[in-house]
Length: 92
Image (tube, rainbow, N blue to C red):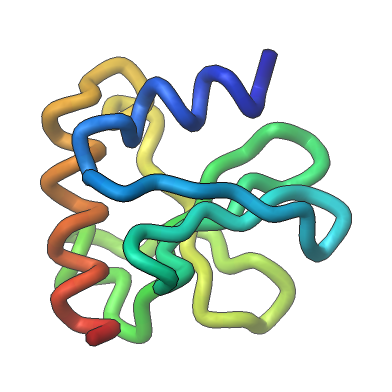
């Protein structure tokens, strides 16, 4: 159910695929990894500038460039997709 939630939340990103990784799942758009769902179900976006992306610092996933989505974004697919698109622009 966590995987289905993440896929639905980010459905508007575009060419979305998934792959198991890090004990969880990575989400890709057009072959670029942009998000991680940890084994506990928590969602992270890949970015080197979490404050610029989220407007605040959030929890980091194991010293990797993945930062937790703020709780309020989990209830707002439009905001989640907007943040994912910003992250993707910075990654490509």
